[in-house]
Image (cartoon, rainbow over the protein chains, first blue to last red):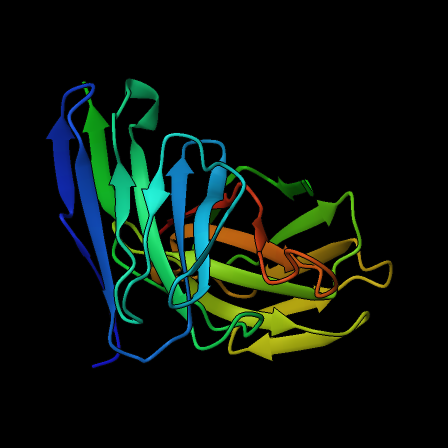
Length: 113
Length: 114
C-alpha cells in the first residue's frame, strides 16, 4: 500500500531535549516536505527536499533541521525544542516537485513543556 | 511570502444544504488545489485546477479557478455527515525560484448537522 508513515504519532517532551520525528515513503517519490499545522494558521511549510541530499528552507524553518540521505526517508530534527514548537506536524511526499498529488502522513502531535 | 485568505473560517450547516467557500490571494497563482482533512488524518487532495476560468467537478464537489487567477471557489452540494472536516485551498506559482512550494489557506472547518 502506497503510504507516508511518521513516527512517533504523539510525543510529549521538555524544553531543550533533542528529538527526531521520522518520515518514510514507499512510493519512490523525489519530493518530500514537512509542514506544521497550528489553529488559525493552517499548514506552513518548514523544509522541503527536491531529491536526495537536496534540502531547502520553507516558510518557517527556524529551530528545525532536516536531512535526506536516502530517497525514502526525510527526518525532522529539533535540536533544542521550545514550547512554541508545540504543534501538529505533517510529512508529505510528491512524485516530483511541481506535481500535484501530495501524499500526507498521518501527523505527529508534539507537545513541548 | 504569498498570502491566502480563506473564508469562512468555519461553517455549521444542515445535512442536505449546499456549501460554498473561497480563497483569495495577494498574488497570481498558476495552480489552485483543494484539500480535505478528516479529523486525526493528513490532508487529501480533492480537486486540482490549472487554468483561469476552469471549472472542475469531483462528485458533489465543484471548484473554480478565478478569472483573475487570484481566487478560487469550492462548492459542495447536498452535504452529508461525512463531509465534516477542514477544507484547505492551496496555490502554486509555477515560475522561478521556490515555484514548487504550495501556499496553504488557513482552512474552513465544516460541521454538518444531521
